[in-house]
Length: 324
Length: 293
Image 1 (spheres, rainbow over the protein chains, first blue to last red):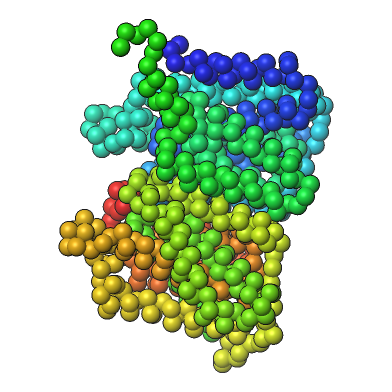
Image 2 (spheres, rainbow over the protein chains, first blue to last red):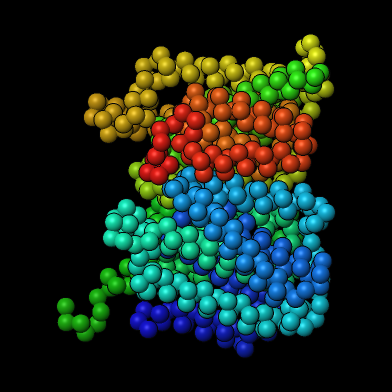
């Protein structure tokens, strides 16, 4: 398909990673890039394509992580079932959020999503009898693919790569299908879209629900990979901002943007953690200072993100032999 | 019902502080049409300012308050010039992410400077209480309330009667017409931002003797301010005052009835309820939320 070669190159490089590299540290970085990229892409379905900027997506990520962890520790069920349950729960919550906040725009929608994720944070951290409260849940390691107890990082690369490519295809669908065009019409001018017979409410709610479900899938896989679920991390506003940040840096509403953004952020974070991690935890804040600054600078000078920005520069260059 | 006086007094004290935080937020929104997602971080900086002055210079927080006023105002003005001015006419999304970026930036500057540990401003009058009939009040809370009410009243008087206040209200009503009338809206925005930041920064200094300080402390307070500001109608200053009292009442009565652990859920559910049922707030104009202005 036209215009997808950068993505093909990106995913091919990612697939080549485990073949070429054996170093666990680098493979870990690759897994995180793909996983955060997929999560940012899931955010992008609502934030980019439907134009519903959410800073509460950590709620869905946390639902996925908690479903996988709790079903595993309480009833010994497979994390794959937990992943499915998390996705279904997130879909339900996404539908509710989408319907309830349908009228809200811009900052109002953002506030509603923050409040929503905070409610889930409080429930997860205070409902001690069920969720183990603020201590969090250590996810038990049970060897095998069905229980996702995998030590070989190459297998993990394969799992998150499948997820990442799936997310990319979802975004590509939203970019090129009739539904996608309708959604773009709703995003740009809802009243005009409605007057042309586009089912605006249904499309927006569906986009939010799908975005929620996909985010929960990432959350479930993340819980299994990292092995520990901390409510103050998985439901935090910081995490929600992180999803949005990757999509914005790379290019909001573009299929490859979230992955590029996640690659940048994760590389910087991993590098600075390795570089400063031993000296003092306070210095960890440095990479977040860089993120904050990058976000401010980015939305000011290139609000459409890196992918369209690079695209414009490539197109402006005169093509050799074009006769002009 | 011997607890009723205590509940009422606690509500009023808490509401006074919330009002000062909320009033700055709603002022910035009313005039600039920007929801300041970094509002809580200015509160946090105010608290750290008090902590620093106390730990390093042995300055009493209330002395710091007077001395630091120009400093907080200057910092607010600087943050407007460097961060907000370029995006003042940009889209909502750009403005949202600019203030979110500012919030991340300030939070982590604090993290690097002061670490993530909770810090305390332990004054000598830390545990002094005042008895008022059946109710018991903490002295620091009483002072914080008094100063907060004073500042809020001063801001209201300024907005109501001063020429600059009128100019700000005119800009809030219609910025295009205001600039046609010869109002330098750029200066109004800078002033509004700096005044809003000063309000919340002062609230931070006042809260320092009562609550521990850590880099993300702003979030818990600013969430309450968002609830109050939306309940009162975004941009409506009188509404924000009344709503602050309502939110404080929900918090105080909620902690008494169902315990402190779950009180946040109450006002967050109240918040979601308002956003769903009447996003324009108690007194706001219907439909504002749909235009997003």
